Image (cartoon, rainbow, N blue to C red; front, side, top):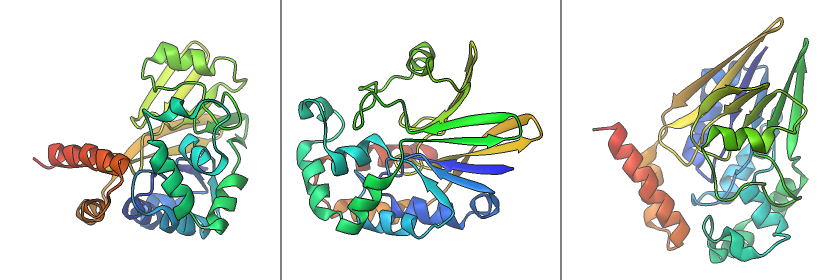
Amino acid sequence: MKVFVFTDLHGNIYALKNIIKSKDYKSADVKILLGDIITFSPFTNECVDLIRKQKDLIAILGNNDSYVVNGLTKDEEKVKYVLKLEHINNLRQELSTKNTNYLKSLPRDFVLKQNNIEIYFTHYLWETKTELVDDPKTYDMQDVYEIFKDVKHNIIVFGHLHKPFYYEIKNKKLVCVGSCGATYPSCYTMIEIKENQIVFENKNIDYSYQKLKNAFKKCNDKPRQELYKILDNEFLRKNK
């Protein structure tokens, strides 16, 4: 069995289109998107529309998706370091009713069972119905282990942190997929399950960054401008 996993699209339609056209995506037996479909990039409805058309794609809710369509149960000041509230409110206005309802319907996790292997997929660990257990983000492996240690599954595949890594600590295999849309190039992970063996491979795929850059130039939303600066720096570093 081959499993294609990607996450943290963040409204990047050009990354999404190239993912869907890729050979790995087309040949996968199972396709999973781990959330954060929207926010930042300027193609909110376009991305959700295209994802909804992928009938064999298992999509999971991300924290940023939840901020927009479900609100927050705690103080909204908490997320100002991630998203300006103005940006969240703008996206609530942008998002169509059909796409809002679609995002609200998404589960927060998924368990894949194959042979004697069980893999737990989630955006990250949820503290409440709308918020993750850790904000701000952490890349410390001991911290990540502490977050997931009470999850009964020993193989955990997640997003949220944007940087890909594979780490074994104590009884856990922790696999961060990396971001598809908020980095350049896109990251995704292929999982191959053969009998009782499992192999993880992180991969990259290019996308039309110049088109995305031109779209960002037309945006007045500050969080979108901040992401554009991050992507532009990564693009320039990769193409020296």
